[in-house]
Image (cartoon, rainbow, N blue to C red):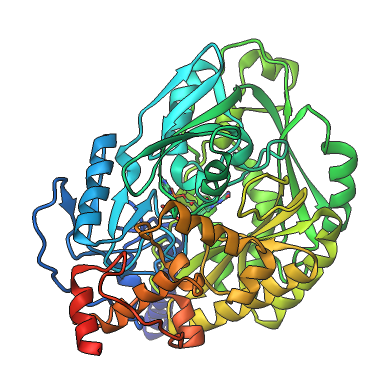
Length: 589
Ligand SMILES: Cc1cc2nc3c(=O)[nH]c(=O)nc-3n(C[C@H](O)[C@H](O)[C@H](O)COP(=O)(O)OP(=O)(O)OC[C@H]3O[C@@H](n4cnc5c(N)ncnc54)[C@H](O)[C@@H]3O)c2cc1C
């Protein structure tokens, strides 16, 4: 009897222990999926690049710079964490003169220069091997001309800083990205766009800009003053000059009624055309497409923000809540098909329960169901939900633009590509852009865009897979008369680039016109301007430099192997020859 009881007790103790251990494991797993990275700020990219090449360090003797150069011979990376690159150093200017002095120093020493904001482009667009990086984030002052309603802002300011400045003054921006941590300069240089379907991309809100060219001269440009430089610098990826200041037209900060509804994706074009497009009361709009494998891209949540009558003071801006819940939901999708289903279910049915509304008591009495949000609050969205502590994989953005009538057939092709490659899709959204008059233009007409947030393993195999998926999606977009967005990974060929951007050679020619010494450089230009002699020269220098070949973990390297360009005959008096160039040439000739 006593033995039986002891046996039972032992069993129940073991059972309890098992439940306890299971509970701990679940809590741990939840913490992993919901937690933020331990390093304060962005993820520590270097921890995540196992298996990818690490740049060698080398020291080039140099006279003292007239400006403070930090991180000498250090490395930088971008938001993809896959582009770790050795640089000469980083200058963080706060005054215009420091930018000029940096350019002069770089010119005298034969160093190339890259301009960087938050480095949230994902293909090395904001830096280059051994370049001096101008980190513009401290160059962030702004002022408002109340009479004209125009904001003059230095290019290193982030949209969050802009919204914090404008909110008490009753103003808002006309266009920006869907997140607010990015810089104004980085946004102009890619012609960013967000959730205001009426304005589309930022180009339409730029009144004028001040740009510093490589020789230190400052040009005040606008659609009518030096229009060529103006239209090339917007979406010009920092290759023509440093955008110093931007004048932006503003709109009122108003209260909006937020709404969401679940629709069949097939109904979206008609809903947009009949209910939203051209109706001024809808001020913001975007769509999330299903990431559930069973309804992939075929079901959608349509989010709208409609102007609401509101005669009280607008509430102050506040941080997005429930970050851990959102992050957990997103990362759940990485656990397999059930996780993907749960994530979409949660997006449809659970996240709305935690929706944050700025609701006044009066308004609540009048419209108990209304969710009211100010425009600035709707735009006040950080990146916290997207940060995570998962060590072996990374989340990658891509975006494709197609003429509006092509959106449904394109989504069919996109679904096929994603399924064929078993791609792990975390989020997909639809935005609206309009034709702009800039040179490197992704929107040749009014278009819908599809933004994908894809997960990939941090490994050569992960890079190869992403390269394959991207190549196929770019072809699918092109087959439907569409294009793709350039701030992301360099997973496309020169032919694909030309097909989407037939004006690419005119752009490269203008780059050489305004920056004949090719002072401004990034990995994107280096990779795609292969017809450019001096760019080829740059590559030649890198190959023949008397220090170990710098290693950059761009996916292109994995996908296509070493480039085999014909190298031109170089002369040591070449316009952009760094000090070690002569040695390299002498050795080679
Ligand atoms: C999580 C995430 C969400 C995103 N969401 C959106 C979105 O909703 N809509 C959208 O359109 N894009 C979006 N993007 C892309 C983003 O808009 C671009 O990558 C943008 O360039 C990032 O700004 P940044 O300050 O990080 O610029 P960086 O990445 O630092 O720089 C981008 C380019 O701008 C150039 N540049 C930067 N500052 C200057 C300057 N002062 N003068 C001249 N050139 C300069 C750089 O040389 C580089 O070529 C997103 C990216 C991420 C990672």
